[in-house]
Image (cartoon, rainbow, N blue to C red; front, top):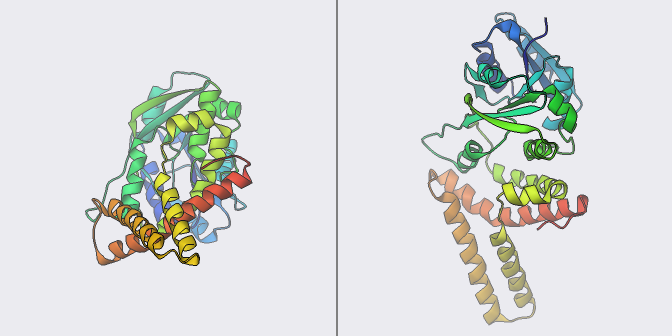
Length: 321
């Protein structure tokens, strides 16, 4: 008997988070024979594989653990759904916790359509001590379509060719799939009852610097869907370009020994950085570590962001500023 729905989860060396997600899937309200879980490791991860195999001996869950060469979450999801036999494919992430009726809600919404996609409701419980990372993660609750909580027919994935594996990070690959569905006339239905909780995970100090590399994939998405990007992606970094301008003018004035103009540009640059720091600290927990992190990273984020956008423009041969 073929299951009604299959859940695809990309993962890599996060066994504790993955087990929490799988526990929520084991507790789904539908019959255990009606669904299957396929976990795809984005690279070799023997420790997670062994932990999952040991955990499965004490639970009732149909699960396959697969592995690919390092290729990113888009490649992992493609490998997973292509192994699935069910008509409906659901996606979530290893750091998410689906509600008990998550799969039931998708199956209840499904009316036998050949080409259809669903997007659920995602909640991000914020900690009492709100960090910059937590506030940014909370934006997922407003997103139209995210792979942390969605489903679609296998036929819809075949029609659009699945995920674009050029998106090597967990960024914009879900928007790319959404835009593919829109272009290929695959209806996307909102299913509020399909609830997933996305807790805020622990991240290293200065994670915001590493995340600026995501701008590379904004360039790719813009090249593929310029109209949809302008319509649905709200990303304004005009402040960053002014920072770069005033810093460049400051250096030029110093070289040319224009002291008065150098002071003016130094003040303008400092003002913009100060405003940026203040904006990032607004409604955040103001511990010494958090404040220090916001101050230091705010000096580097504008230039890293511009660098990766320019890099993406060159890589994908598109003017993207």
